[in-house]
Image 1: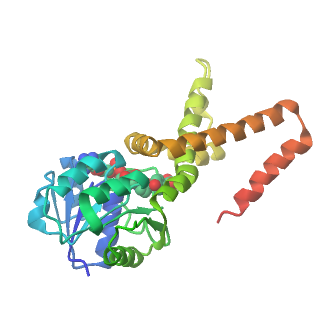
Image 2: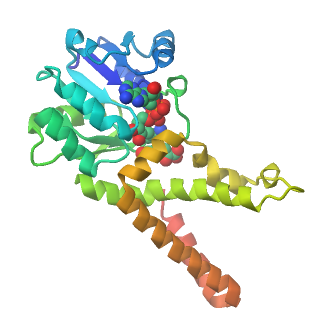
Image 3: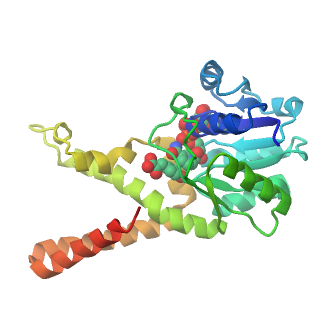
Length: 283
Ligand SMILES: NC(=O)C1=CN([C@@H]2O[C@H](COP(=O)(O)OP(=O)(O)OC[C@H]3O[C@@H](n4cnc5c(N)ncnc54)[C@H](O)[C@@H]3O)[C@@H](O)[C@H]2O)C=CC1
Ligand SMILES: O=C(O)C(=O)Cc1ccc(O)cc1
């Protein structure tokens, strides 16, 4: 049973986690740490956290039994360094960052066997604590990425914690995680950002194409409204997988372009039908 939770990064995900956690562990006290004092004030106002600080070393007095790292992945290394200088041997430490791989091994190097990597596959294009949602993780996958070094006891506790928040827990190798989500999450975000860029470039002085969005355009580009800092960090941290996925996408787009150019009815229909059949298998 957890008594004291510390969330580092009181934004959309950190806030959603704090709300969900409080529902499952109603007697726990929650400390929020964030570089942005406005995020802390807002989180206290909304009842997401009990108290907050912009100082990492306030963790020491608080003595959390669980620390959740919920900042953009580009900040993980400097935060891990800071945490490693504090005596946190009685705290379990986990994260919810969108990239694992190298980051998990780096975090273990600083934080030891009580660190367990995690990634809930739940979210939206929204950011900021004001968009937090206590039901975000219910019925959603949460990938845990233990290594040989991870304490089995720590893993068990983190697993049970996510289950009690309503998540469906699955374990995966940290590097396999980055291949998988480089394809099914990071590539679609890259394509959505690029599609908006292309439509911007296709707009002319005489016509603003963004005035005429259809439902499909809106569905497809919702995720291009996501936070640029978060996605900059994800693309750079998972660079190799994201670049390979973009190349695979370029090839598929080139094939489609050739079929449209040649006007081959059968081949074009087969290409579209094959994609439609794949899409229909996703639930
Ligand atoms: N937004 C989403 O749908 C999902 C995001 N994630 C991951 O969750 C993490 C957080 O994302 P969001 O909550 O959406 O972002 P957000 O922008 O809503 O919140 C991030 C918070 O971290 C704070 N922060 C930034 N640098 C910091 C530092 N050095 N020390 C302390 N606080 C710092 C910011 O002030 C902000 O309040 C990212 O690692 C992201 O990859 C994972 C799954 C889904
Ligand atoms: O908005 C959406 O549909 C998302 O896909 C949100 C999301 C963003 C990043 C993640 O690591 C996981 C989920």
